[in-house]
Length: 68
Image 1 (cartoon, rainbow, N blue to C red):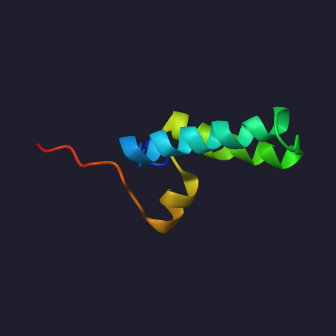
Image 2 (image 1 turned 60 degrees about the horizontal axis):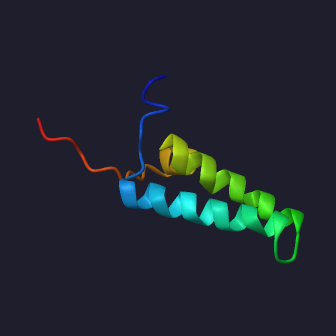
């Protein structure tokens, strides 16, 4: 279960997701005031948590590996 929620996003990926999420959410309050801006919740949450379920399904990992 722990490997299901392991961090699979790197710092750049997470930062970009948070920025895109906030930008999309802002569309709900300013600009066209469209509810389509609520789509921004997905990249915002995945960026804050550090885990993307789609990355897990596809086997993608942008998080750098820790050297032992």
